[in-house]
Image (cartoon, rainbow over the protein chains, first blue to last red):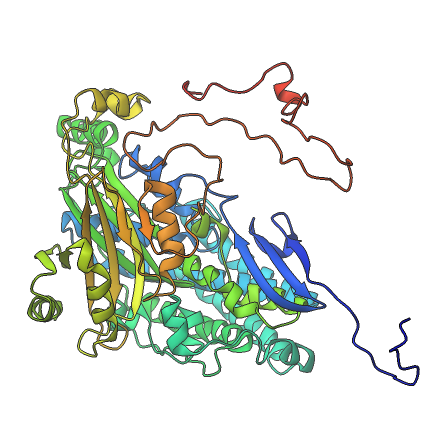
Amino acid sequence: MTEHHDPLALEAELPSSLMTVNLGPSHPAMHGTVRLVVTLDGETIVDAVPEIGFLHRGFSKSSENSTWTQVLPYTDRLNYVSPYLNNIGYVMGVEKLIGLHIPERAEYIRVLTGELARITDHLTLLAAIGLELGAFTVFLYAIEARELLWDRISELSGARVTVSWMRVGGCANDLPPGWGEKLRESMVRVVELTNEIDVLLTRNRIFVDRTRGIGVLSGEEALDWGFTGPCLRACGVNYDVRKAHPYSVYDRMDFEVPLGSAGDTYDRYFLRIAEIRQSHRIIDQCLEQMPPGPIIVDDWRYALPPKKDVFGSIEGVMAHFKLITEGIQVPAGEVYVFTEGANGELGYHLVSNGKGKPYAIQVRGPGFPILSALPRLVRGHMVADIIPIFDSINMIGGEVEQ
Amino acid sequence: MAQALIDLLRETHPDAVVSSHSHKGDEVAVVRREKLQEVCRFLKEDPRADLKLLAQIAAVDLLTYSTESTGGAALASIEVPAYDLARKPAVEPRFQVAYNLGSVARKHRLRLRVELRSDDLKLPSVTGIWRTADWWERYVYDMFGVEFVGHPNLTRIMLYPEFVGFPLRKDYPVRKRQLLIPELDFPDLVRGPGPGPGGAGVPMSQTHVGRKNVDPTTYD
């Protein structure tokens, strides 16, 4: 006690110093392996530095030493909760290099499976944000819905998550008989469960208090940070690659792009629910409009010949052999192809020198720029707000760290 | 639509654009390195261009572009880079850095490309124009070793600081090994102060007892 101390003072400044706290890399709430070095003043966040790369697998380097087809399984592992969308983005890039047009039915199947993947991705976010804010029921509902869809996906491709099902020129096989009906039934349950989550969280006082006004970003600033997808639309910017640059058969689909206004965690959460409903509409339309026909191009320079021809004709054997050993001979060129991934614009920068292997591949994971803005989002908030903000940007380690 | 963008750029910055072309539906403008910042600022702020979204910065190393072998054995071989390098002619400018830009309001796209010689791998940073350039430039530096002049924190992003070399360059072998990194010598709450695994006298880990380190010149 100093002599200047006033014994009558009830409130005095508590001397404090900044504290550094490590979040992750192996922390269940860090979704993968991101390390966040947070500087705290009491409970207020002064600064946060994300450190990534713990999951770096050398996607680009591995891809440059594989054939164009062998890259496909690597793309599954970029975003492991919506692998179809990564497959689609990649094969669309290769088709753009070749200048290949794929059969109409394959386009519909791509849109259909892509939207399925989008729903599973959004359900993952809902599960995580619920669980990490203490709503375990929400987690169970979301995971039940997601498993239901993964059952349908595994009937299609044989794998729940790492599907590798798209092919250059189409897709691997046709929909199994009766699969569409099964999917319709599953979707009813998925929407029901989504509605349950909506009821449990959207007007829940605790949830709203924890998320509204937290991690706010203006539309202009979000664009400056490279935000795309639901995180950008939560700020009120109407940008969806499916509408702005319609690819595949999205121009024939009747759907809306839900928009937020506040750009906070709550809007980013709620857009996911709204988008699941829109994806459901697209899936219904796909099932209705899907024409019969081939599902892969009939051009043996790019697509494997049917097994009947491989075993029955010399041309088939040769085409098969050349495709497997030498890979698809993609003409030389450089393209940037972008599609709407579940969390934003998924871009592939592909370079071919015309010799059977990708000369250069670099991927734009939508989470990469969004994660780079995390310090901006959390600064000034309390330490407990990190988790909902981090959940709402839905960073996927695989695509960010490649 | 994007052709109009290139015309606009040629009109306002005639000495900045080296060449431009349309390739498989993508519009590309090759710009001079000295003018990059000026062009970027113009493209972002001019309402006719409105390229507010920097989607990606990607780089290409052209070292083996025309010499790379293909097919059969070459696909399976880990020695492909060495094979190619022995026959490589000098390729200059060796590196290309591509800026994939987009506009939300006008719905057009443009790719800016800068060509770099391998003896002068420097680019002006565009972090002052797009905030998102921060991490993309760190990524390109990490993978290709392109130095972005004016970047506030140009450090490795995916890899660790002790990593030697730039993995996406074509002369970096696919299966090259790296030295094991000792733990930093700092007081540990559990173990107490002193050197950690890999530090003075402490083996790297149980699997490396009796072995000092790996030979980075070998393949695994």
